[in-house]
Length: 185
Image 1 (cartoon, rainbow, N blue to C red):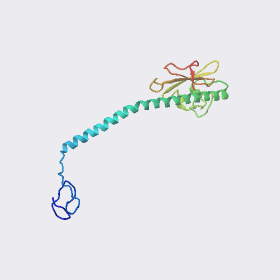
Image 2 (tube, rainbow, N blue to C red):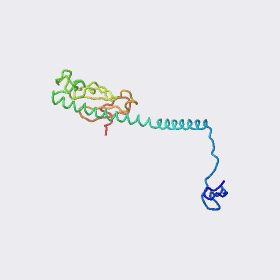
Image 3 (cartoon, rainbow, N blue to C red):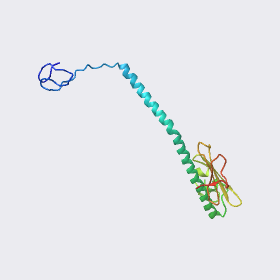
Image 4 (tube, helix red, strand yellow):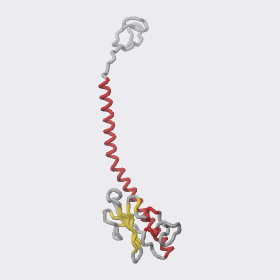
């Protein structure tokens, strides 16, 4: 190989011309890679990335499920509080507790009254909201509210109860919470 500056024969091993000291361009032979090998490597890389993504998704999904259940339980607690507050308002207005959720709901004819006091939104007055079912019963001393998951373990892992005391109680089993269940803190 000849030096591009002085034109003398150079030794490729040092990387510089021994006469003038100019850097010598490497004349290393280019390797030719088979296109099939490139495609195979690319396909393996794509499958590797997909496998890693699938593993990551499998690890994240249970946490998303737990977060969703927790959010639905919190919404159920807020709904039980809303039902209790509506019962207190109903008692103030009509000197008795509402016997059903529909009595606390919006009126069909536009005018609020004892049969539909417009104290709860329609979905909650219907008794099913956010993965929970709600029941309201009148007792001689007041009222009782229960909130139970539509599908225990999937939409919720706790049941809730409250009454005229306005204390919310929870049970961590499929059985409905009662006045004897642990107080929610």
